[in-house]
Image (cartoon, rainbow, N blue to C red; front, side):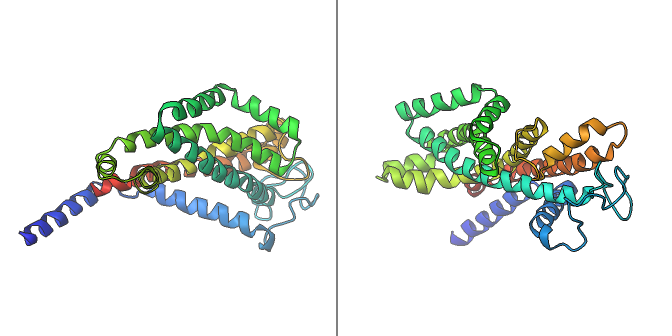
Amino acid sequence: MTAAMTTLTRASRRAAASRRPRPHLALYLSFGWLFLVVASAVLAPWLSFLDDPHQPLSGQPEEGPSWSHWFGTDQLGRDMFARSVWGGRLSLSIAGPAVGMGVVIGGVLGVVAGYFGKWVDLAVSSVVNVALALPTLVFALFIVTMLGQSFWNVTIAVTILTIPAIARIARAQALRFAAREFVIVANVMGARWPRLLFREVLPNVVPSLASIAFLAMGIVIIAEGSLSFIGVSVGSPSITWGNILAAGRGRLEESPHIALTTGGVMFATLMALNFVGDDLLRRLDVREARI
């Protein structure tokens, strides 16, 4: 009997493994691109082949891409490749803490609302619905205008934008798992709410939040880029992808490479984040895989 159960268990595991989505080329390319972008951003101060992104006349002004300047130069002759790397450094430095704080705060609010329900759910959901009803860019613009243009003020602004959306997703996941059989059985067996919440519900919500974090990174990068594009993000001389695009928008006919090269890097990064986030969302459903 034991041997038959062991064989059945192994067969079910093999069948579950065969149903899991297999990595494809786009996913490998996405991971590779994200590693390249993050590594270059982190190591930017020590990369000897990078020119000084603030140094004017490192090449001819508005020179097209070449072997000496891979992304060309801008209106002041500054190297666009170096500026793209350093712009990614600051954009990711804003997006990382913003998403991290958004996942923690929004995740806690959503899980608590979904698990306890009743007046707790009503209170949290009401605040989340009001926040989601506000025009996001206008709200971020208001926050930065009131607090001032600095790194941490922009980070606070985009963090506030991520919390309501993540809280709603966490609430939906908590509602889903709070009604599952393993939670109901644990409740019937006398488990108290801290164990149910932190041992049964929360571990199953965390994988979904981890995958959503990659998608949220893309949204935050777009939000910061939008603020930079209208001139209310981190002030000069700081470099972000958004203010590079803003500087090149008036030169699209004469020097399109100023905006298109950095815009291409930003687009590829957003696509990679979406690929990775979607794949993790399909894979990291811990409890379902075990069942």
